[in-house]
Length: 476
Image (cartoon, rainbow, N blue to C red; front, side, top):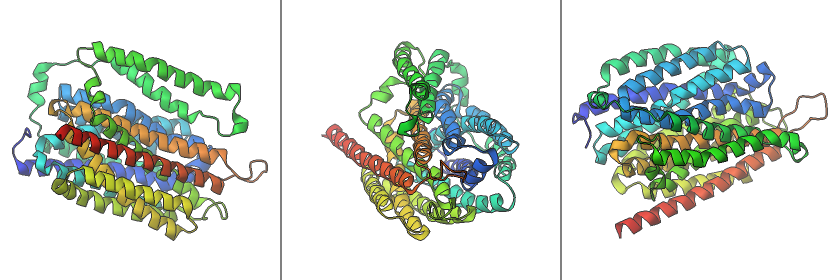
């Protein structure tokens, strides 16, 4: 049962927390049309540019389960306020950045702030009755898409007529305002209970988790770009990082088995429903950010390698994707409350797979690409709402923050893998590398990126069918 029986209070909390999601996603998508400008301003490679998104997501991936556990131990509101403050500081630093190192550092700080969302999800779960939870969840998730719609349109205008610095600085006063509103209007009844408990965080497990996740994700970005690049010296950074991650993973699992208050409850990882659901959510994250990293470069590269557009063209192509995501996210919340979460998830995975197949086979004009993106958005939004609802209702309520932290960790790992894979393909297959002309990704790079998205989408269909089979076995 929700901790607060006031339905009105639940909707007030949902409105405030949704505003956090709106502004955060607004800030992220404002940056997407600016990626080619950042590549030029800082004179960086396409693979290095993936760090503008990846560093943010890696930090979020590392901190999400930690913040989720802290919220269970010390109170959701206290931790939420602290994380919002960190996000504001990171955003301000980003707006003041004058080199790629400073920008990436600011994105890491922002990424720590990204961990606010499992806490927000947990508060929503506490306040809504289970039969209405999918509606609240759908609205909260839909607001991410609404923020993306605003961010793409307004961000493209700001980048073209002002500068990419303003995509950061415009967010700061909005987030400070919301910080004050959260402090005054969000009421969480577990604050006094957890203050008496005085639970301590698993420091050892936390540090090992940071090593496992960060070395794996950073290792992805050091993969050699082409066959000719595969040499002993080029492979060593990737090998060292992957081996480090592999060595520390069993150490982490061992510490969690023996820890009194583990940062990750291994029973949640082994759950027959939660495990495939979390992997499914990770595949959805990969699919989303393959698109976000790729399309701005594709649209703004010169003809015939791209479409010769600008930031506004990038926004126009992706706008239907965001609008459809918003509409379907809202409607799917009501749909899940009526027919359950498995059917919408499976239908969504199938539709997104068909959309990616169409994008891979045929993408000659911006209009056709935009139409295909709308199909993909329909499927991904439906699948995302359904999968997150499966995760929400399958976890024990007293471990909701911890469970959502694990779910968001895998979602963010997927989102981190997406830009890395995209950056590798675009860096591997470039034109004009042996001339004085500026080089751009070849069409083959985009074909391989879209083909990868098709393969990942097929995996998502298989995972959903596995979840459905296990659910039926439990009911039998």
